[in-house]
Length: 263
Image 1 (cartoon, rainbow, N blue to C red):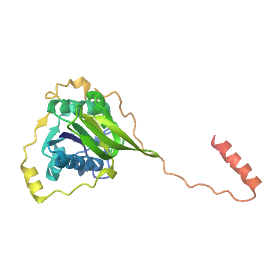
Image 2 (image 1 turned 135 degrees about the vertical axis):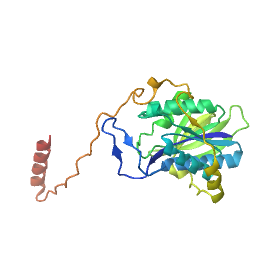
Image 3 (image 1 turned 45 degrees about the horizontal axis):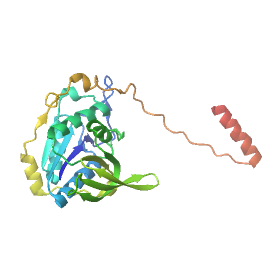
């Protein structure tokens, strides 16, 4: 079973800075970690490989420092890594990002399953995983909390998953190849072993640019992004509420006056 995991390196801090010209995060000089939800995606890929054999590959798009995230994934037990790094990628929105990642998956070619974390902690859009599936025309299941069964000896190959919804969960059957995004309930990520860390440090990780993926520059980056951030601001601090006291009739009249003044 060949599995591809898409991960993202995110700031390890809530004190993020914004470039006033591009309205994008300034990542240089900021301590970074693997997006917490992506750790569950990495772990689930490794567990599936341990059950069914095959190969696991991790992909990330980001500046040179994102190499650290790939090596951490390798130290946990992922087999191979690919780094998508190019100035032309800078400023890509979720649509352009999912296009870039989908082209990388196409270049890898042989896969049964794509796994992503449900969302990134710095964007919280939960759009990239489904976007990759849309670009590749793959069936998908989001917010997966459990993989029930996998049938690799059937034609087509089938996977049955449990997907979280607001009032419980759904059981879905997916025809492979497919994409899933996972939530933290699915597993407990392992710690890297010393042997894994030593192996990851020596690994040669290929770096692919937009040319390697046959992408035109006007389809990616800020210029190729159909959505753009036009303004960023800090919301005003919440002010304390007001407690109305007295007779019910007086409270109703006071409440009516407050609502009328507000509107």
